[in-house]
Image (cartoon, rainbow, N blue to C red; front, side):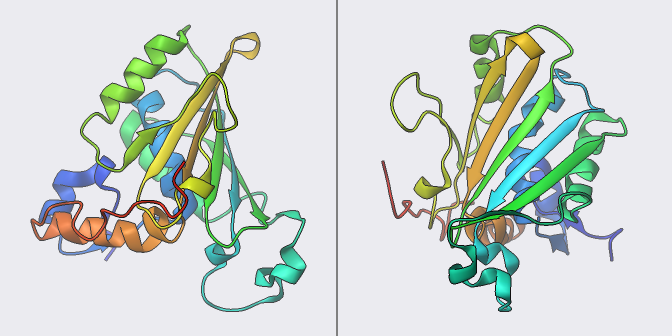
Length: 229
C-alpha cells in the first residue's frame, strides 16, 4: 500500500493527490513543521544536516484514548518532554524534505506536552548556508505560498502577537508561519502553528478529499478561528 499511496499535504503533492486512489494524511507535528521548512529547502538556503524541530502540543495530540498524561490535572502547569529523540513524525519530515532537496536530510525532533487541549507550535532551528536578509526571506515565503488558501504569515515588529500562536488557530484549517533571523549564529528560526485537530488531522483529511474529487479545496473549511485577534 505504501507504494500506491500519496502523502497527503496538498501544499507539497496537490497534483499527485488529484490522481490518487489512496492518500495518507500527515502527522500533526510533521505537517506543521514541514510547511515552515519547505521554502528554505526549495531555495537551498539551509544546512540539511542540521535541522532541529521543537514542538509543543496539547492533550488532544495523544488521540482519543485516555491515559494519565492526557488528564489536565496532571498536565496543568507542566511542559513535559515526551519521546525527545526518534519521535515517529520525524520520519515524515525527513521523507518529504529529502524528496524536495534530493538529499538525505537529517532532522532531530523533540515534542513537548503542554497545558493546552488543542494546538501545536513548532520552533524549527535551521542554519543558513548563504547570507539572506529579512525582506528577501519574506519574499521567498510569500512567493512559495502565494496561491495557498490555508497559509498565513505572522510577524509584527511590536505588540504581544509577533509570531505564530496556536491560540488564534483553534477551529480553523490555517497554518500560521513566521520566522526570525539570528545573524550572530547564521540561523533562521522558522515558526509555525496550527490546530492539531484541523490542519493536523480532520482538516487535512477534508482538504485532501476536496482535491481528490475535484471540489473547491476550501469546501467545509471556511472556518474562522474561535479566537480571532
